[in-house]
Amino acid sequence: PASGTPSAAPAKPAPSRPPTLAPGPAGLTPVFEHGPRTAGKTVALTFDADMTADQGPRAASGERFDNPGLISTLRRLEVPATVFMTGRWAEEYPDEARSIGRDPRFEIANHSYSHYAYTDDCYGLPTVSRERMRSDLERAYTAFRKAGVPDAMPYFRFPGGCYDRAALKELTAAGVTAVQWDVVSGDAFATDADAVAREVLDGAKPGSVVVMHCTRSAAPVTERAVRTIVPALRERGYRFVKVSELIGAANGRA
Image (cartoon, rainbow, N blue to C red; front, side, top):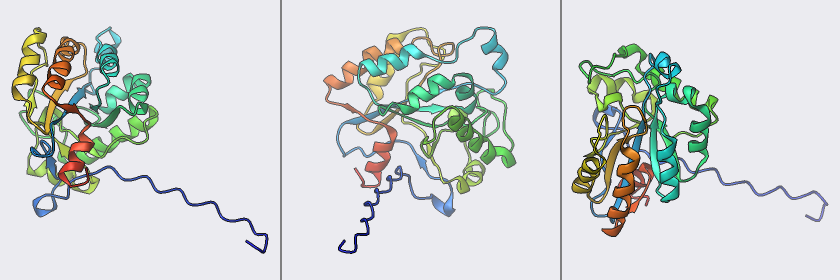
């Protein structure tokens, strides 16, 4: 300017918010199961990084709830993925959580802090009381931030995939989208990688969300299955995406 006053630096554009679904009926937490079937051959591989709040002694005795080999394979194959992580997992493996969270190929989403069930009778999991459901979710985000992941996604996967209307209501104020799946890999406690791969390859459709696990002790063949799944789906013309892209497509943003 003629007055000699320096021009203000142009404002940086605000980062775009991750896509979420609008609230469901009666304002309840929305539930996402798969993307559009007609928006191209995309598929999202999702991995639950499970560790229950009471499993610390098992980790201390040598049981491994992480799977760095799987993450390395996803990187080598250049596969985007969404990791649904418990807060307790992030506390146990903060360096791995930070590495995953800072890799643009991946996104971290919330799988609760405790991995306690939000309903009764959910695969034998302990349960979290209704009045503690939201704080359990928020405690996971706190654990992610402490591990160096400040921008975890506003997506939540119920432990065990178990939820009811009461659980959806309790989480409404958190503003998250609950993410389920439409393809069950069956990798939990599996011993046959080829059988896991077949489940995924037989079930995958455009827009599918595949549920797998990132836990060596409970899902020991997942990495081997992924090495079969990825080239086979690519040969069929599929493109791997993160859950955020599928939700964006469902909203018409992609």
